[in-house]
Image (cartoon, rainbow, N blue to C red; front, side, top):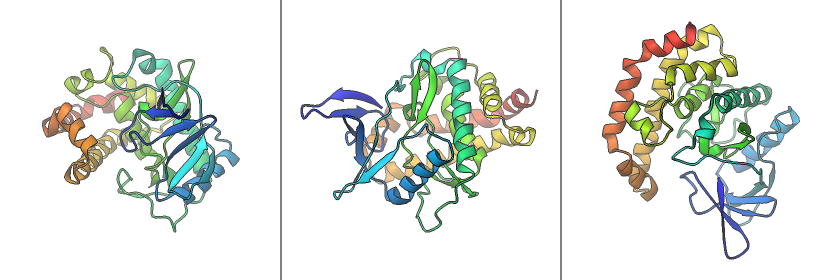
Length: 271
């Protein structure tokens, strides 16, 4: 998230949709609405650090008014329309490497089965590792053109590592038809080639590469359902965004494009 000055000496951090207008920086701390899984999530974030993953915010405390405080991570965050510096091949490789590091640390941490993890973007197949589920440009802090840290774990839930890779690919290839991509991304991005770069930098196995295009289609349907639920609830941010970005016709076009080009993506991943 990017910072804007606030009159009370706090900074409003802009970016993202779920907590728009409610996230502030105060010195070395970020204060934001606490997700309902905050206690379990804070324990998980601390455990990640114990297992060598230091590229996430450090939880500080929960406040009595339902907010959380975490360490602020300085750096650059790409907001839409996404700048070219965030979409270089170097940036993309660093995203894949960062995700792999997260998963290697997370695989060693038992999931709190008592927590009611959000199902919004969760892997329908479930899993034994806590996935981030929302590794979009808005949620990665860059330094010197490379992914440095991952923020906003609100939608984290148990799932397969490949699900997290698929969700990440949606934003970073991006897995969008050309008309949809042109509205948010620099021109000239080669989605099949970039999908291969992400798979290489993450270290996907041949079996995982063969499965990835289908999982991306599944993840895209999950994202569509997520937006549909928000729109049905009358969430003004999602209603406005849906309208501005082409409505359900855009989703139809995007999903048809994925199916049509499935073989192209598979060949790029396995060549």
